[in-house]
Length: 115
Image (cartoon, rainbow, N blue to C red; front, top):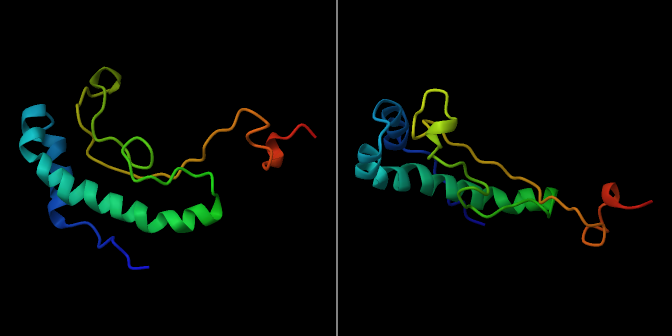
């Protein structure tokens, strides 16, 4: 399988530094294309490249390259932010496991069995 992830461009790193300074909707909207091209697209490619291996480790991991699933949101709720900033100046990815509550749905997972 050919890798889609080619690294992060300097433009994206510059964007993350600048969003810390220009942390407002007007600036972000004017530079959204940089975010989408130089941050979001490479992160999605990285998740797509890692997903098959991660699913071999745990088939229940969320592996869709989607904001709020495997990719962090750049937007934040200012009311919950100590410094009241609107946008994060960092991004991350995570592969989370689906939570199973019903034993019948998770019968193959011994940690959720009745025995």
